[in-house]
Length: 164
Image (tube, rainbow, N blue to C red; front, side):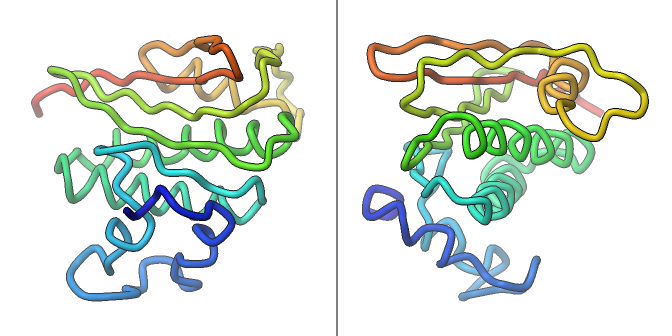
């Protein structure tokens, strides 16, 4: 099943050119190649290039599976990038997982990793060049948090979808 196999190859299966189809149809086969995070968690290797794969997969899923409006979808993709960046830089994990859930008027995005170290929302100065990830999550999402698991944690955010 896609998304359930070797996580080390997930980032390598994403097109090298953003937005360029890698397969048939408007999604370029991305959901078919990597897995559908709206159905089951998709595992990624703990590599910097996995952030791009997670962003592309999130954008594709939000656009094609849920027809999410452009602005909140772009914000969700940015926040995925921040959570994935934290997982890659700070956990020391071999892999992390991405899952998208929709309940009523809410979208929930989860990034799971095997570290029990909690992310920390730091004060952000105007000229700071790093440490803004959770600040962005706090600012752009309606709510966010961390669920500790017996082996690791899930860092998540939720966004309310409004009819426009």
